[in-house]
Image 1 (tube, rainbow, N blue to C red):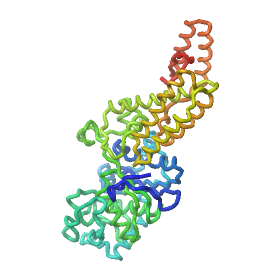
Image 2 (cartoon, rainbow, N blue to C red):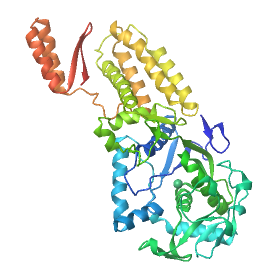
Image 3 (tube, rainbow, N blue to C red):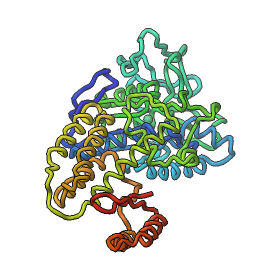
Image 4 (cartoon, helix red, strand yellow):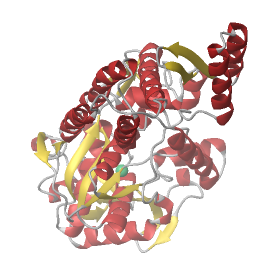
Amino acid sequence: MRFFNTMTRAKEEFTPVHDGEVRLYTCGPTVYSRIHIGNFKTFLFEDILVRYFIYKGYKVKQVMNITDIDDKTIRTSRQRNTPLKEVTDPYIELFHRDRKALHIIDATNYPRATEHVPQMVEIVQKLMDNGHAYRAADNSIYYSISSFKDYGKLAHLEINTLQSGASGRVASDEYEKDSISDFALWKAWDENDGEVYWETQLGKGRPGWHIECSAMSMEYLGETLDIHTGGIDNIFPHHQNEIAQSEGFTGKTFSKYWMHSYHLMVDGAKMSKSLGNFYTLEDLEKKGISPETFRFFVVTNHYRTSLNYTDEAARAAGKARDSLIEFVDRVRNIPDGPDKFDVGPTIEGMFREFEAGMDDDLNTPQAIAAVFDMTRPINRAIDEGKIGTLGRENLLKAIEKVNTVFAFLEGSETTIPEEVTELMKQREQARKEKNWAMSDQLRDKILELGFIVKDTPQGQRVTKK
Ligand SMILES: [Zn+2]
């Protein structure tokens, strides 16, 4: 497997730190509002990454943090005059609900920042002791970027534009590339923080955002991770700062690989609340776009392309997914019998192309195309009545396997209820007796149950409405 490593700007062969195991850290949601679909583009990329590692037989340890304290969560808590936890808890619940609707599999841990403050304090203390951090006049503690010789490497920053010391200091969690400077590790309490503070050996205050991820990743995954991921917005300053903190603390490489997913645009523009194109899954569902459709739209595009969301493009993806589901239904409905067509070479060819794509920096468009390519010769063979019991079972096994990565069958009712099967039997009998009125009546009954019957040379075929 080869992945594009943001650190080196090159595709590199993947070799894990620990044999057969992947330790993956994925920056999680900041829970001050409902998560928008742009964030879910990143989480879906990570889901495909995890699922493909599992497909390849790796044991995956994935940690996704929950940022339940930072500038934004505190601001929201102040604006609503509501305790921090009462602001963040409902959004954490909503995040998990949306995540499950998208069939994103569970991470090993979802640590919350507010529950890991002692670990953050320990790192900051050591960074002060070894000269990477200092206390400023405002009583907050800053990371001295000039003390870290590789500062700027991940983000490919020009080192001579760096400002450090009293002239260049930034207290806020988020800032732009033109204000590269010493950043806050520990923020001394001020009245804007209200009730939110910890009394620690560093003084009364709260952690900066970047230190949270250094602490939680190392707590659960050890000092050197295999892969650290996020959206490209995270490269600077967030991930750059995580490296400075973690490596300043351990003296070891923090993460072997860095992978970043590109932006999701909406109708050709960057998502923003002012443009009214800031969508959640709920907004999409109001337009009739299901989480499964959105998932298929995102995961069948490459994670390193800026993806332009339009309702039309999402609906087209939904139709493509429907046609795959219909294909699976068709295979399931192949009656028992002898095989006159060897499905083996078609399946092997599909897996070869599928894995060649996935192994090459998660080329999901190539991988899904391999699955669609398989449907054509198989559909022909089904039309000609050449596939029997063995072919059917082997095809279903192959589909099941690719589905563990793409999860396109999840949420579809590809199993036919018994009631429908019974009506189909009655209809078959009616047709044998040339009782067309009865046949039509039964077809309507089946339709009422949400299934469409088609008559083919091989008999009746049923698909979900
Ligand atoms: Zn993070």
